[in-house]
Amino acid sequence: MHTPTLLIQKFSQGDSAALNQLFEMVYDELHTMAKKQRSRWNGIETLNTVALIHETYLKLWKNQPNHIENRRHFFAIAAKAMRQILINYAEKRTAQKRGGDVTPITAEDLELVEDDYAAQELLELHATLNRLEKKNERQSKVFECRFFGGMTVDDTAYVLNISPATVKRDWQAACNWIYGELNK
Image (cartoon, rainbow, N blue to C red; front, side, top):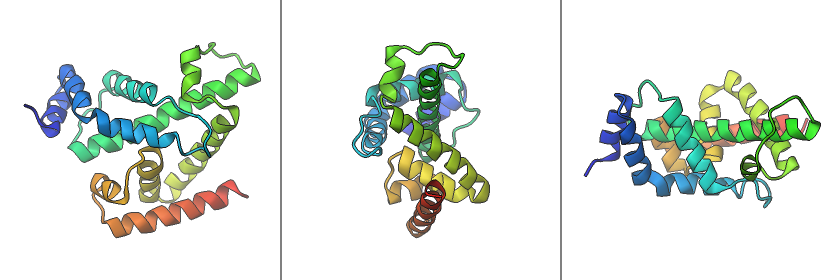
């Protein structure tokens, strides 16, 4: 049997079939990451967990990263992919609501971000997180892993190769900064 690290190496070398095996092996962990998103928006149903995982798979398959170092790097990439997917769907939803000249979205697209308020909150958070990334990239990555990836302090420390104490400090600082920015 292959290990996740071996499958990641094969995928990085261009073996697309390795991604299928990798997703089967880590599906439960990805499902946990995606499921945690459901609780992020004050109880509003914002995500279809399975659809988010499948979209993450497709994004990684279509845009195969040049190099994935290891399991921790894979999960960091997956968290970033989930964030990008959520933002894309939120943008589509708000553009559709405004009647913009965009391609109509399908009912399946609406399942990811079902609520207009949640879509708007997500876009505001995304813009704020982009500003934080320019100010402090590590804090931004910690926030992305914890919030969008649903990772624990220890998981985030492992993925970003920093200490749990640093994760806690960066998480608190990022949350405080983002809260201040969103409530100006």
